Every structure is written in C-alpha cells, then in structure tokens.
Amino acid sequence: MMRKLPIPIALLALAAVACGGGTGDEPAGQASASSGGDAAAAKPLEGVTIEVAAKWTGDEQTNFEQVLKAFQDKTGATVTYASTGEDTGAYLGPRIQGGNPPDVAILPQPGLVQQYADENALKPLSAEVQAQIDQNYTPYWKELGSANGQVYGVLVKAAHKSLIWYRQSAFDDAGAQPATTWDDLIGKTAQTLSDSGIAPFALCGASGWTLTDLFENVYLSSAGPENYDKLSKHEIPWTDPTVTTALEKMAQIFGKKEFMLGGSSGALQTDFPTCVTQVYAQKKAAMVIEADFVAASLGQSGAEVGQEAQIMPFPKAGDTAPVVLGGDVAVVMKDSKGAQALVEFLASKEGGEVWAKQPGYLSPNRNVSPDNYPSDLTRQLAQTIISAGEAVRYDMSDLAPSAFGGTDGKGEWKQLQDFLRNPSDVKGAQEKLEADAAKAFKK
Image 1: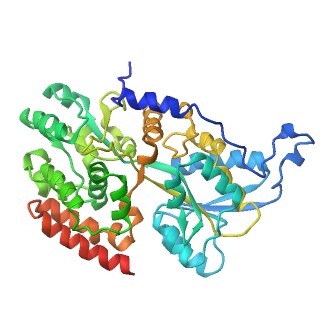
Image 2: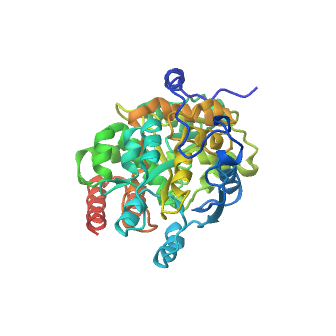
Image 3: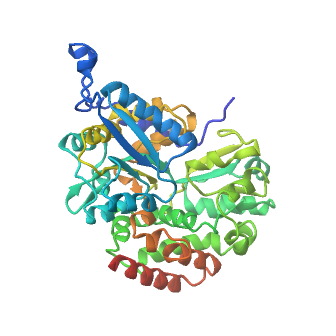
C-alpha cells in the first residue's frame, strides 16, 4: 500500500474548501457545439494557424501537445509547436530582431516579460484573457505578468520548490521524524540522522540555483511575503537585518560539516541531480532540498514516490509556511488571429484541467481542482498551492536580472556558494550580495 505523504491535514482541509468555488467561464471565442448550428460554426478559428514556442522537449512537449490538441479540437485552429531549447532568450532574440517572432511564447523566467516589454516585443493581453486571470489567479500572479502598467503574461505551469525529499529507510533506521519547523529540522531531524551515522543532507552546491531556492524558502518564511516582495525588487538592500536572519539559519546547516555529505567541499562539487542519486541510489545521505521535479531524477534507484521517496513541506523558519513556485509564463508576441485565444485557453480552468491530467504538471490556477491530477503526489502539492493563497511567491532569483539571479559563477549563485564555503562571514556575504544586486538592478 502506498504510504501517505506527510502533507499536513490542515492544508488538505483548507484545499477542500478552496476547491469548492466556481467553475470558471468558458474562454471567449470558443463557442460550445451545444450553442446551435453545425460543428463548423462552433469553431471560430477554422483555418487559422498559430505558432507557440516553449523550452519543452520529450515528455514535457508531448504532454503540452495534448493541451494544444484540446484547443485545436475546440476552436478549429492549427497550432504548431517550436522548442526553444534551454536558452529561450537565444532562440527568441534573433526571431524578434528579424520581425518573425512566434505568435505565442512561453517564457521560463518572468524577468523576461519586463525585458521584452521594454523592447516592444510583447502585445498586451486582451480583456478576455485578463478576465480569466482575474477569475483564476490571485492578484500577485497578475502583477507577476505585468510590466509598465500593462498585463503581458500569465503563469501557466508551476514547479513547487518548497519541499524536502527524504529516504524513508534512512529515517526508519535512525528513528528520525519529518520536521514542521526549522528548529526541529536542525535540532531534531538532522541531528538524529547525524548521530546515527548518516549524512542528513546531500546539497547540490555546484548548481548555484539550488542554494537560491534554499534561501528563498528560509527568507519567505522568516521575513514574510511583504519583505520577500521588497527584496525581490531590490527595494530593501541585501544588507537588511531580515537577510541576516535568513543567512544565519542557513549557516546552521552550512556550518556543520557532518550535516552535509562530504562537508562543504563535497557539497560544492555536487550538482543537481547528483545529489538525488546520493540520497536514493547510493544511499549516502537522507535528504535533498529541492522541488517536485526531484521525482524525475530518481532514475534507476528503485525508490518509489510515496514509499521510499517521501516529501515534507519546507519547515517553517518563521511565521509563514513558505510556498515558493517556479514556472513558465505565456505571452503574446503577434497580433495574429488566435494568439490571444490560445493564451486565454491556457489561462482558463478548462485548459488547466486538460494539462493537469498529464504527468509532471502543476497549475497555479486556483480553480483547477486537484482531483484532476494523476498521482497522490501532484494532488497533494496542488492542494498546498491552493491553501497557501496569498502567501505563495515566485522564485526570487528568476525575478531578478539574470546577471544577479540566473548566471553561473556570478551574482547570487556565486555569493551563496562562497557563503556555503565560509558560513561564519554573514556580514561579508551580505555586502557582496548587495554590491552585485546594486549593479544588476541599475542596468
């Protein structure tokens, strides 16, 4: 029997209430066949071709194409898909400059919305799309897709980053329990594991973005959503006392070599997903701090999600239970017939529920019922997103200029790696983070 994942019952109860709301309006321009007339009359985009570009390949592309098929069947449009590869900017840049962008692009970083808006490469979303956003998303997500007073994008796919994965057999052998608070994670769970002879954490320090994810969870929880928003916009400096508190909490792991597999030097030589392999295949550590996509890196370990591979919500390091999301933002790049209709469909309850039935997907759309998801894991993660409500925030490093928040060997990635190397110098780390942020945000 599948072991129940330790998502708090209170969250599930809240989610049940949240899911009981309205059903959402049918996207405009997609008349139902029951509205009268023949089937052709019910498909207003017959003969229209729409190109959409996104980074997905393989299974992710196949799953997205199921959503596109539902849109095509409903509207009569023909949708072609182009993969941008991992570097979306490198793909879109020449096409924008050549005057031939795709009709719709799905951006992996909200920071690109502001960049392309400044380049006049985006079209404001229509009133119909904005109606879907207002109905299905909290105001925070609308603001996330906005630039210069216009709404340009909608978050259509999410990654849940407020998780700690653990190996059940390691917990059983040590007599350790999942933690609900940061103090319990450090003082009880990690210490119990360490005392039993197993490294509590496999840290993926060679992949700097994993350290930003750790910081964001600790900071959102300890500093609260309002300060999180301010720091993400550089409205408060990285030398602020709220940052001091978060880094000091991280140092409770970084400063104990026995808490990290291979100590700090080992962590700094371990990338993602090697840290997942160290926990589940090699069984050298007990926990890995990362998003729901850890499930895709279990590989040949034989660890089944919900049994050997368990999750706990990121423990509270303050008053807020953190829910940090990454994800992808749909934007319109051409005033072509059908582009707005496709984004409207992706923003709707209907489109979200088609996608939710595919594996490896989470929706920030609050009206997409978790009942649509194909596994216990995704159902429960979706419920935590819904129940968190206004406290959900987007990955801070992806909101920042890429020179600070998204470049290997620079900015936040480098400074948090250096802090992992020397966690006693909190003040020095803050000063370096602030210097790098100040330069990046001025550009």
